[in-house]
Length: 318
Image (tube, rainbow, N blue to C red; front, side, top):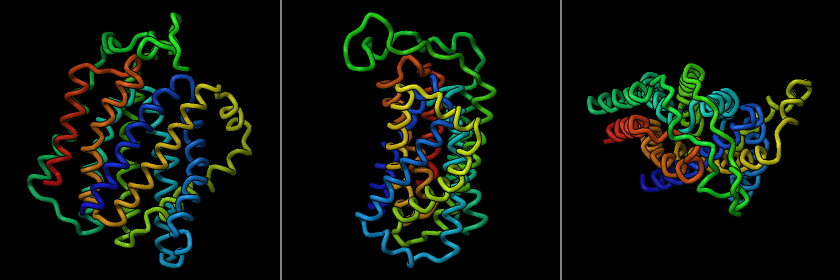
């Protein structure tokens, strides 16, 4: 269990950086640009990691059905779920999105009970209720919701590290609650399925790096043929240098996070990994403050909503 917790903490820290960098990329970029950059960079990164860890040479240790589960997890998580995640972050910010995504905890646990015969106690049900309460608390249509967002640049300086009187960061876009909550819930539903697919494929094999490489390769295999579509190519070419830089940071951080997530699910059950990862998402708040303090909302109700959903996640594993 100690090894699983170490994997989870490393994954959560990487996810926090990913969510903050996605927010910056989505100011001028599109969800499609983020999905493509993360998939391509992810395959290259994991291919190297699998070779170094020697897991690349253990492909025969997994059954054909395991590879089918991993491929399904990759397409579901890295294309459908990630697209919805980027749309939600672009609409309502990373802080609010993390609270809405908390719905994937009860979804995953209910599926784990039904399909993997994992057990849930009364205390865990109380935690699930708190997880669901968080998004309700932060939902508010208000012109003042953007009070925490201002046109000023991060920490009063330019993005290249030098001081500048002209804001380096554009004004925060308006909060789009309906779009954000809709895609946030779709994101939660999609991401609640993938842990079960991963756990079913890897069980206690410890082959998390090979598993994540398989999932990323499956998503890339679906995305690459779509480059033949002119609309897709135009969308990707529209990314400017600054947007591309943030999406590269996002891609590197999320592939690191996913690698450790797969490793955790290869040594521990879903009902342990998913809630602890959710609790560790409190790291999104300080990272968002450091990188996106002018773009994110840090209203009391937003922070309370996030912390409530995280506290609920902790109750699930007590």
